[in-house]
Length: 199
Ligand code: NI
Image (cartoon, rainbow, N blue to C red; front, side):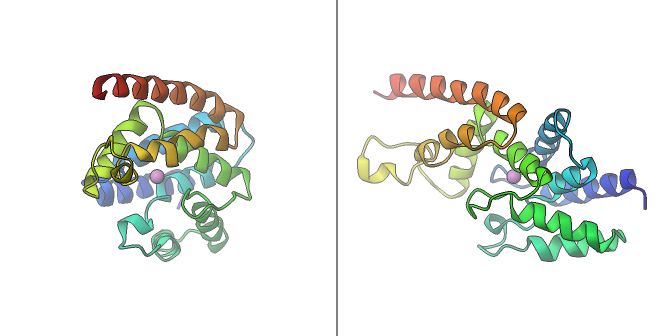
């Protein structure tokens, strides 16, 4: 199968699985990650095909969607093998996806993994990141925010401090760092207004 056809089949497969996902990891999240990755690719020397496959498949086996168990390797291998993709390519895609996650704390070892990680992280910040943060919190029955110090640690707003504000400085590529800077400033403005309204 040609690379182009493999990418189309992958997109269709992901669309079918993720369209009704309600935790902020829906199909359009994945599509935005692919679009972010394509933007970053314009400034980087990398294998486009591996980056796109990694971006499309990066959340397929995510532990958050499978009761705490990461099924990435199993699901990605089975799907790509069904398209008769070379084992060497499958191994690379599995490796890229295993290095993307924030919670696993992995360091990307290739430029392809760095790009997919940046593309995913860009979608976690800025206006879209704010929307996803509250949607994810809602799916876990978290409160939006609390003025009480003890309750606050379980609120969606706390996630800004635990993760979202850290992402700008964790970008691997220069083009992602630039986009992240704008999105980061917007989140700061957003929180300033948020506090004005609740205090
Ligand atoms: Ni993602």
